Image (cartoon, helix red, strand yellow):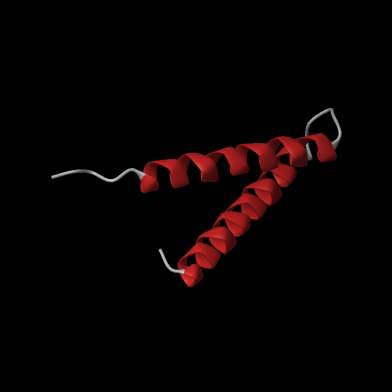
Length: 63
């Protein structure tokens, strides 16, 4: 992967994490606890999802 490909993957992962965190913030806004906790939880979920996707994309299928 070229250097630009790595930068694009990083930016895509960051954007996806931020999007999930904002969606989680709007969902968690109606809960009893602080929206900041919801934001942190959804950020962790988004980060984990990005790591899982990157892990599976790095596995090469041998044919």
